[in-house]
Each structure stands twice: as structure tokens, then as C-alpha cells.
Image (cartoon, rainbow, N blue to C red; front, side):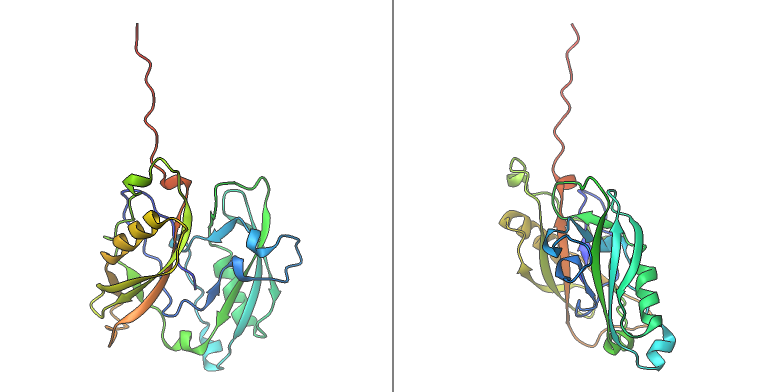
Length: 240
């Protein structure tokens, strides 16, 4: 799973559920073989994980030890919502396909860049089902007190945007021990700001799951968009 957070200045961070190995959801950049013409690397949208939950592993599928990969196609509207969806390639298990389709069709998408598509666009999403995910559900969440990264003051005049991938080493008590950048945004100032902000965050654990026995790495995608750029002050005309 790729966890995408959409930063908004001075607002509390949302609490998306996080996968331990970030392996279940392969976002639209990684899929090939679509019946539609667009190259996956040119997809304008990525799933906004701050507003998207992961499919729940069907109990019957767990009992039958069903695993597989479900390839979906999503028709994304210009506002980032899903207009239509279908199973492009089955995992071989209808219960898994139906769970992936039902949940991921309700997700919202966020722009990777600045240009808003002029029409609805088909994109592909791949969801990988493993029994490891079923046996060890992800109960760690970002605490609601976690603040989104502020836009770097020294970069305000450069209108920088981009996405980065960051791994956090989380202690059993939910604090962050270490961070590392897996893939930069192309702008060191944005990368540093993201790393500093998330290093101060805490993670919560559901009471039913209990505290982890050891530190664990959690990987997240963080997206900086045009919405994060500081707003220019309005020019007020002086009255004569």
C-alpha cells in the first residue's frame, strides 16, 4: 500500500490506516496492460490515502487461505472522485475482487502535478492480497494531533510541488525513532520539511491489537500540491 497524505498548512493530519510493508496497494503509476491508451507513467492522479481506507480481508477468504492480485480500472472524474470502476483482471477469487472493487471505488484521487485533466480519465490500480496481511492487520494510525508539514519559508517564491516517499521507524510506544527518504520530491527543501514534520508525529495502536513487540518501519507517500503554496495577499485598492 502506498500511503498518500495531502498536506494542508496548519491543519491536523488525517489518520489513514497504514500497511506494515506497504505492499498491498500498487498505485496507478505501476500498472501496465490497460485497454485504454494512456501510458501509466502519464496518469495525472494518485490515490489520496488520507481519505481512503484499505479493503478488509473477507473472513471466508481468510479461512480458505485465498490470495492473489486484483487489477482494477477506475474512471476518475476531474474532481478526483470515481465515476465508474471494473475488475480488469481477477485474482481468481470473487470475494477478494469484490472487496477490492467496493472499497477502492470509494476512494478519492489527488493530482500528481499542476494540470487538471479536462475530461474523465481511466486509470489502473492493482491490489495484492496476502495471508500475511490478513494475519497481521494494520492497526497503527497517525495520531490526530500530528500536524502537516508547513511549506518551507525559503521556497515560497519558487512554487515547488512534488511527491516523496519516506520511511519511519516507529517504536512500540508510537514515537518515531528514525526516518529515511526512499524517494525524493526533487526539492530538498520540501523533503527536509516533510521529514522534520513526520518525525515529530506519534502513531496510535488499537486496543485489540496490543502494542508491537519491537520497532517497525512504516513507509508513506507525501504529496505537495499547488494547494500548499502560500497564498498571495489580496491587493486592496485605496479609497480616494
